[in-house]
Image 1 (tube, rainbow, N blue to C red):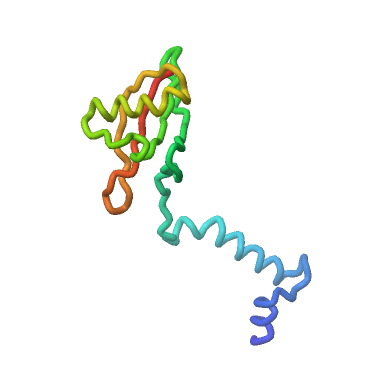
Image 2 (image 1 turned 90 degrees about the horizontal axis):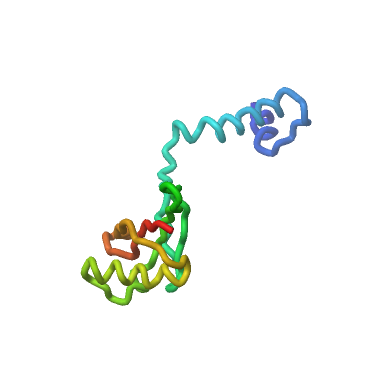
Length: 126
């Protein structure tokens, strides 16, 4: 029994043998079935641009003839905008040199784990 376990640990079985097939089957079962039953506590992280003046852009479909994009902008790039009008104009000031003439549909604040606002996600039509 100890020899069998040792051979499994050190992968000493020839390819195509019964024990080799058992080991490969166990590995594949873990890879494909494991995530359904094991909570690895992994969650997607909000992708905020790492450096100031970086802007992340994602396509979000289209409305008629207009393309819809989502821009993620760091709060540092808005230069202290506080009110709704200031935030809207600051977002457009950051986006328009990149995308040209766009219309801002909506924006929402992005917070980190502590609840501090670190950026804004702006949906625009172009």
